[in-house]
Length: 167
Image (cartoon, rainbow, N blue to C red; front, side, top):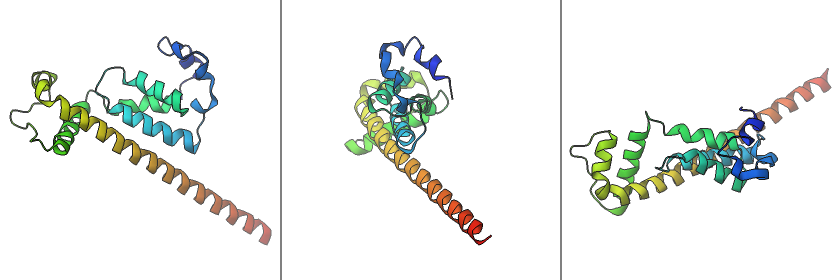
């Protein structure tokens, strides 16, 4: 984990002032981590630069783990961005009942900017829907995995205590 003092002093995060002193932004607990996964993954689907600032802002407002939220936006990195956003576009086109543009498709920023006037509505809708669905899945999975870990830990502790009583 990055040092929370360095994050508090980061030039882009200084605008949040004392809000960065909230303990929930730095602790690992079921609520904070699962919420951070939801925030980070949702923000990964925002097709704008500054996704990390959006993730930090939302994490601070809903009081979830800040470093996890900010780091998860890198799900959409230069390698994964094109296929993720293309699938988001196809999702939006499907929801809107439109035919997705597939002819002469290239995974380049140039193709994207040339086609922007035709694809912006289904693209943004697909990004929003994909972000919401992915965030819900991530939140639910983290909560379930955390619960599973906790149940296993409690069972193991009970077994140890039972063994100690027998001895």
